[in-house]
Amino acid sequence: MRRALADDWSITVIDQRTEHHYQPGYLFVPFGVYEPEDIVKPIEKFIPNGVDLVLGEIDRIYPEHDKVVMGDGKEYNYDILIIATGTDIAPEEIEGMTGPHWHKDVFDFYTLEGAVALRDKLRTWEGGKMVINIAEMPIKCPVAPLELAFLADAYFEHRGMRDKVELVFATPMSGAFTKPKATEKLDYLLKEKNIQIVPDFNIMSVDGENKTIKDYAGEEISYDILVSVPTNKGSD
Image 1 (spheres, rainbow, N blue to C red):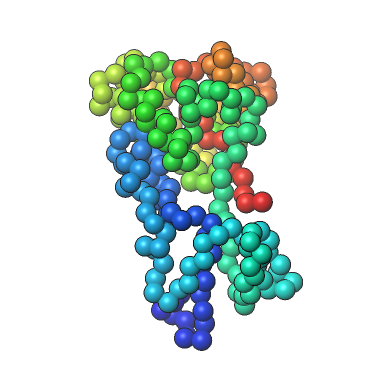
Image 2 (image 1 turned 90 degrees about the vertical axis):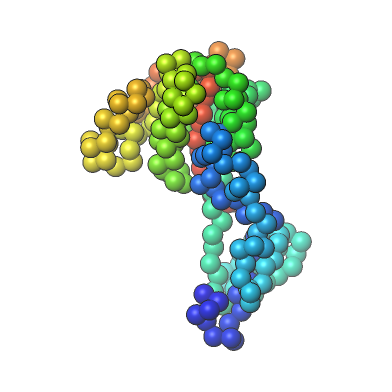
């Protein structure tokens, strides 16, 4: 945009984070393909010349006045506002998920902290039952949970312990893939990789003490490691 627009246009990027995270890279951290330093860079590296960077949190947007107000009270006026606030996980939406077992036996991989904690767990894990669960749709990068299942299969195969690991993919959808036609054509991949699928599982709660998850229909799934994709929520 900076190259395309005339000089009388100014462009300002406001970001509350000082670091840029290559979020697709989170998927590979648990398996040692990427280290955190491979996917975290100073945000300034991504801002081209001629673009102003403001670091800080926006408190409110006033569209009737064409301005945004920062948390510290500073105001920025605009002619055009492009909003890209993204989403964050909200594990607290699921009863019991963020208890004392969070990032010990129950993990996410949609944050760097969760991906690193899962990596550390897998390095010494001797096998058992790993359950990968999507809490609800929509989520960002809908295929990522299935990618994680396939990467886990390859990781345990490489370590010579695949026969000691039971992989379960529990999803609120009727199939492993987001589109019915894809499920119909590609479902065989899960059978080939010995990944059990539990469809139409709408998680209600996590019992970290007994290592089970329960859905609203009363179905329970036990686990040794739970990898969750919690509810995705937009910015307040």
